[in-house]
Length: 134
Length: 160
Image 1: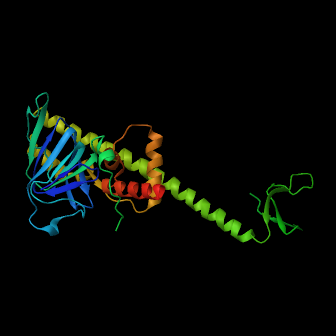
Image 2: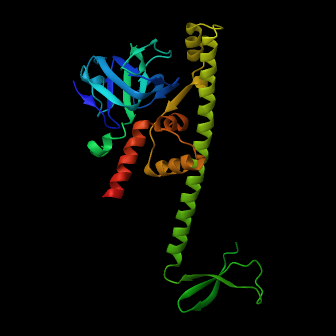
Image 3: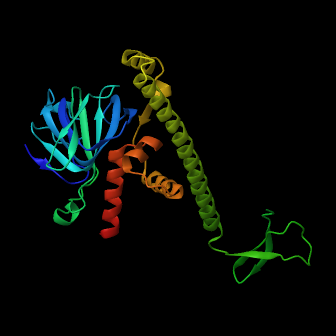
């Protein structure tokens, strides 16, 4: 269980809780690396994605750097989410902070989330470790 | 181009006539190539020409995939609007997508080499739009993680 803020951090799970203030409609994609067909969309403005149900086995992990433990959270400005289904997840709007409301939704299929844009101050506080391509 | 090399050999140099008519008054000497490097010069020229041809073809393929993927995106949004207007149900939408995957589903795969990454960067810069990495990956059928890796490697090369 850990929190991740840096760009290129990712999670993989079977169910996830996602909170954001803006969600795009997204497109249908057939991702060669994940080996799955589904919907890819973007969650913007103070977005977070938390693992609710882990993968059946570690062998199901498709991306080597992604986090798969229960309770792992991605928090950032923009998160790209891939769900292995063709329809939109059902969303609800309620209070997230004292001043702002947010969109809440749960995914019920395989989910892959990756941070596209981190919070603007994160690169100054935590400079990223450059990883070499294997 | 008339590529007949003249027989004149002055200071170990080949004098190449590029003019069409071999008359004494025309400008005979346009290109001067060192005698020893004559073959290597042409080899370099051919390699450069091949690289330019590859770049041109790759750019064209990026533009074509971009238009195709935008067409797919519009098709999917139209289907979604029909569901919102209650003209079709969600089940109908799923069956329509499964029956015509080429009309709605965008295939995403990784870039084969570093050159393609730089060509794609040039194409995106030419568009002069504020595009995020996910939009670029969905429009040009490029894996987002692959883009991140390429960028990291490039920054590593620049920063040392």
